[in-house]
Amino acid sequence: MANRHREFLERGGRVFAISADTAPMNAAVVEKMALPFPILSDTGRREAITPLGFADEKDPREISRPGAAIISPNAEVVFSFVGRDYADRPLEDVLLDELGALGLPPTEQPPPELGEIQPGDKAMPLRGLGPYYRGAKFAALAIRGRHRNLGDDFGDDLKGYVEMVDRYLEALPGVEERKA
Amino acid sequence: MAINFTVTDAAGKSWTLSDHLDSAVVLTFQRGDF
Figure 1 (cartoon, rainbow over the protein chains, first blue to last red):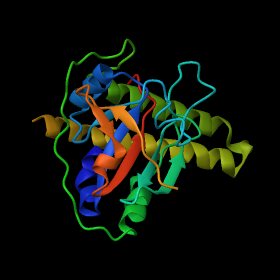
Figure 2 (figure 1 turned 90 degrees about the vertical axis):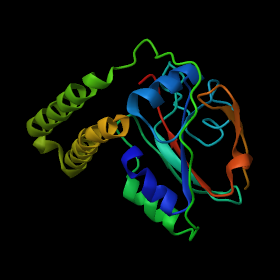
Figure 3 (figure 1 turned 30 degrees about the vertical axis):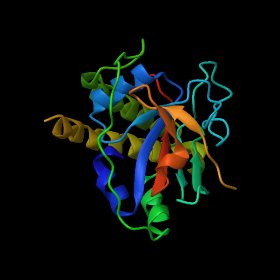
Figure 4 (figure 1 turned 180 degrees about the vertical axis):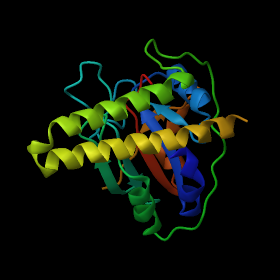
């Protein structure tokens, strides 16, 4: 979403990421990825993650499911997508269409403020993301090739996953551009 | 149904949804530990 942040603003939407991580961990991600929007911290998942339906009750790390919600200026949730797992995320084009349908004037969003920066123990350095994404992509392609007999649902799921990873790979140069 | 909540931003300050509804708010939920 960072590379297309301007498109969200043009449709009257300010972007805020949210996770169950601490503020210093979120600050580390904002800095690493040069995000143009903040990451908010809901460490107990009580304030927003659970009430909005994004708590991942199966994962013992007490995290959020990936996904997105659009909240209109009258505080109504007008769109929500809750991912099934870490490989299931909303398409930016879908979010932009839903946001555009609200007919709002353009808006602006200041760069995020950061306090203490402290990456999590498992945080991946930026230079590791490209190899990580490529490895995930080729593993998915190999599995898809092995199990073509499993039908369209399986194949479509893997195809969607590979397309998602390709979008992440395409977005990586944008991080370097924002840092420059 | 109207919602509101308060969380913490990356500078350690309170962030309340109702303070930011002069536009739409697009929340992107992250698993974290990234």
